[in-house]
Length: 140
Image 1 (cartoon, rainbow, N blue to C red):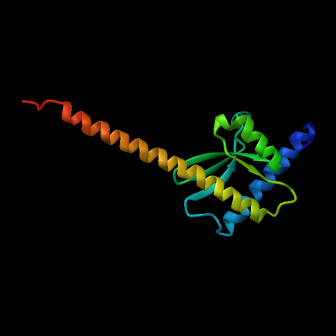
Image 2 (image 1 turned 180 degrees about the horizontal axis):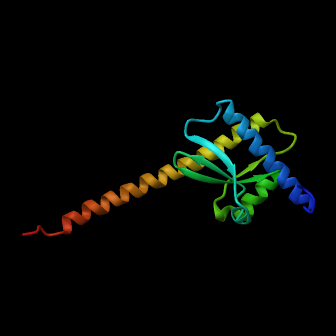
């Protein structure tokens, strides 16, 4: 399966597999928060856009970029932050419990942003609706 891959591609594949398997194990142990359903690998077209995994939550899918080191994660953030794809470092020498806790924090922060945007949008739509109904003359 790894034949024909470059060294970097192999490292990425192994890192993503470690992350996915670790997250599956934590889910099966009942360690996911109630708002997190599962984490799943992406299709190749999504991977080409920098999304390695999807975290399926109660507010929708949250994209994740998986990196094999903190250096790689920081590099990704500095170069690709404009895409707003959160990244998770999965170093081989770091216990998965620590990676899991960091991942939950990252997904939770993204979830909070989605909830905040949704609340702001609902407030703006309500304000527009209320303002609009005052401007419409009564029908005869």
